[in-house]
Length: 207
Image (tube, rainbow, N blue to C red):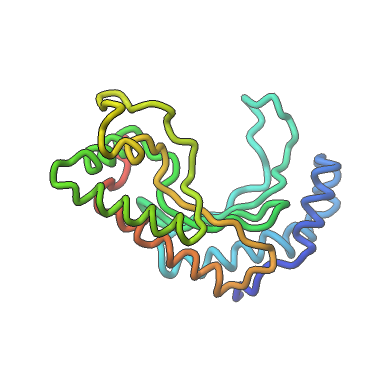
């Protein structure tokens, strides 16, 4: 099926689930979840995978094993497609969060990113600086929070300290639920330079 956007019924479902986050409610309204949330999300994923690679849609169930919050279901839904970096979209009660890059890099990925930023040739740092500047100027937020101090092995006066403090290399913009498929794809196109930077300078996780 072709993704045609989300219906207001999606937010109504999440609002009701927030008030009654129980298995009984979810089972009784599973058809609403499937038609207004799951199917459109799968349709969008299919379109994303054609360009960015394999991905997935998050399950509605929360992992409550180690959480003090024992509510069994998420009141948001999200999808991801890509390799080292990729595109992302989340549906929340506030609307959509759309973007991409590399979120929660592994330890070895973070190390390689910082080496690229610290390189004397400055190509990696300059490229990332330009990408971040362009995205924030276009209304994106860089995923955070960043480190409050310098990472181990780097001084606080390092000329690229703001980039070295990044813990994620991803950018997101907030859009209304009524956002068209074309506008979502435009957002993904805007973060492609960041995805490519991650592919070139960071690479896949090895640990």
